Amino acid sequence: MKKLSPVDHVAIHTTNIKSTINWYISNFSCETVFEDKTWALLKFDNINIALVNPNEHPPHIAFKVSNIFEYGKPSTHRDGINYIYKEDDFGNVIELVENRYDLKKEKS
Image (cartoon, rainbow, N blue to C red; front, top):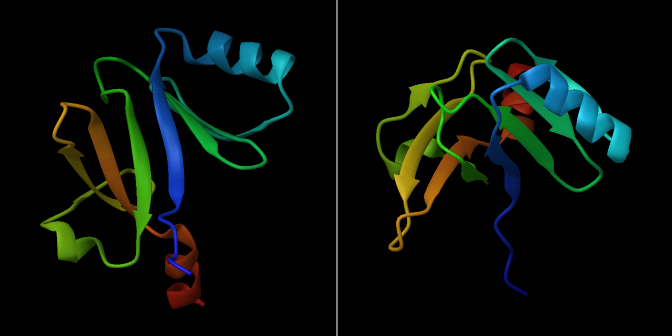
């Protein structure tokens, strides 16, 4: 059976991080993994949602990859995760991110 590509998160725009966090927490069962003035990460049972400032990041879907360097030269987020932004053939932004679980294993 073919192994499916794992999704890391979906990023949506907001101009008020704190209010958006509060809305999602009030309406769904989720946890805040990270929060600052420019972005936040909410953890759900089966996916993460990144709340991003429109001036910082495009709305996108992020896929986990084992070896980011196979896809080009990555940049590094503040949390230390390497990433590459790309567009699909239809102009949708996708982000490739290093598999966070692989990183934890390497650092152990």
